[in-house]
Image 1 (cartoon, rainbow, N blue to C red):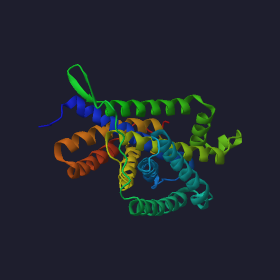
Image 2 (cartoon, one colour):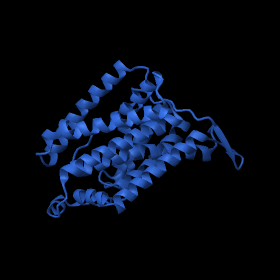
Image 3 (spheres, rainbow, N blue to C red):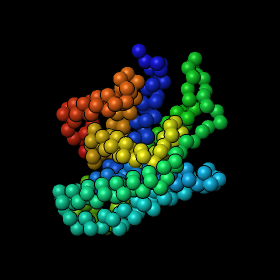
Length: 290
């Protein structure tokens, strides 16, 4: 028997799913354009939250702390693209994917160890002055409504950017037909860096949004990476739109599983659920469509 009324549980799942979609969308765009499955992507979330938490502990104003955290995530993303991953761009196919996996896995382990050992108490929790609101006889947490609204707005902005802007269309063209895009004068280097920066912004935003509804600690980067990878697999590793849909599906399913059978069994059940989805839809929920 669930202790939480189902509509509220659904909202919790949707908010979690939207947050995961923000992280996974950046991961998908990076893989689509750079051919790299960035295992260190979840640590970008933690870099931003740890930076903000440390500055807040020293008395920094909240907007400045959040802006500094965002800047740290973007700086790390740029460093990753320009310096760390440069050796793999001359490779093709499986060699690029495998070397990218090894490099980003090593970076993820290094960042995780450094953050946990250096800032073990840098937990970020963003509290709102009004904790709850009532509507139609139900009491909703203000943080859930705000975080869901911010996440949905950010994803809509990403959708419009990819669909309507020149830069978005250039990114899509490079992903779908790199040779044709190059012939048309689209710069791979410029837009590859842009995609990594966007990924950093999305990851940082996800960290702050999660901080509204739960405490984000320096040890949770791996969890974010794993869940984002699962979302990418279900949504299609080259489909941003599929990633958004998959994030909501996985968020709702995972939330209900935790409420019914607990966290540990929920992880096992979630993997079984995802395996079934992959068997039914091996190319993602909506295929390769961006």
